[in-house]
Amino acid sequence: MTTPTPRATDLRVALFATCFNDTMWPETPKATVRLLERLGCRVEFPMEQTCCGQMLTNTGYAAKALPLVRRFVDVFGDYDAVVAPSGSCVGSVREQHPMIASSGGDAGLQRRVEQLRPKVYELSEFLVDVLGVTDVGAWFPHRVTYHPTCHSLRMLRVGDRPLQLLRAVRGIDLVELPGADECCGFGGTFAMKNADVSVAMGADKARRVVETGAEVLVAGDNSCLAHIGGILGRERSGVRRLHLAEILASTKEHPA
Image (cartoon, rainbow, N blue to C red; front, side, top):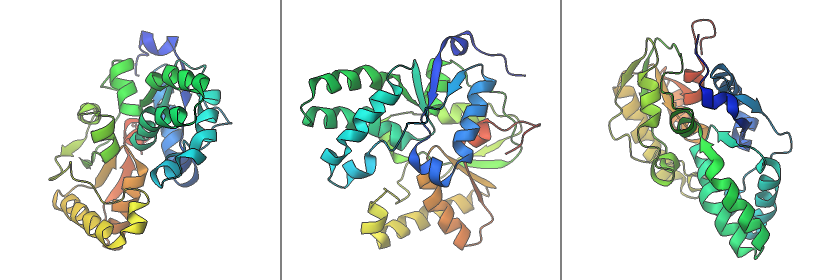
């Protein structure tokens, strides 16, 4: 039984599921809630949440994302912490929202964005930095390799926090992924606009995953896992893809 940390019980935590997870990979936000509640957090899911606006911003329509930035601070502004199982979306909130609010010329919105952005965390950041835990009581007896996604690695600089969490999982056989810090080639709309390059990069990543002998590929963003996992699936590699939250939420009683 995992003992709740004193810090966890004091916080009012909101889950920012992200639209991609909510639409395509709902088991990830569910796993995030199970994990946080096991650690003693009181987690709320604001029903009014929507997309963070990253897709609009990344494709040159930042002005169109302004209403989404305003909605984000309206929905999440009163929480002590906002946790998302996506380095990509957290990166958008922390790095793009201030830019969008500033370009909109709304000083009040800019202040609210600046007040909220330090309270928005990628899952591994929240666990390690805020709750102060690396051993979350997980059990996952499989051979696993970890892919650090570009936004978490380069924008959020989560470093080895996900690896600290994975190393503490009971029964896990964690193997290093060669060329782990190289992009998988997804990049959101990059995969659509530059499909050939994207597939070539993804194929390189998938080949290295297979070479590790891993049963499971894990990452902190389902977008990258969808890209690499799609290639692994077409190649009939037998490698499963799982989000970090799903492994950390796994126990003997509730295996992933």
